[in-house]
Amino acid sequence: MAASVYLLDTNILLRLSQPSGPYDEIVAAAVESLVAARTTLFYTLQNAAEFWKVCTRPLERNGFGLGVVEADRRLRLIERQFVFLPDGEGVYPEWRRMVAQCRVSGVQVHDARLAAVMAVNHVTHLLTLNPRDFGRYTGLTVVHPRDLQQE
Image (cartoon, rainbow, N blue to C red; front, side):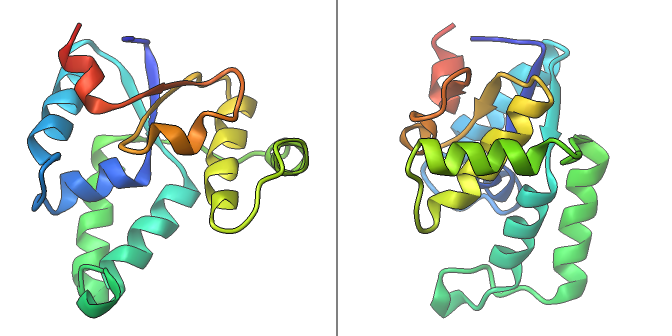
């Protein structure tokens, strides 16, 4: 499963930023193993926007309830640790093709955008806690953090 480049899904970035759940140790260990293997770990504008949304959303609405200053601090940590993968000109047509071809609707359009950025930039591996959300996209190797422990 180890590849030289991975995109980190937003749920991975959120777990690294605020550990408080059952997958936190598995996520941290998976990212550490990828870093030790000299894997380039990417994030996108989509990840950053989703991360900011969850950080600043109130606790009662399933967010972290953080202020802008703390959200900014946490996003800066991500920016220092991982590599920004830009959208580029080809992302929109690829996203447009994917949502129509795969019949994507609702909140799943955000995952389609990540898949489109990956496709355009030839990044084939995605580390996520939600592998099923990406199963419809061909050319992606979707990896749950626990899968890296089994290697």
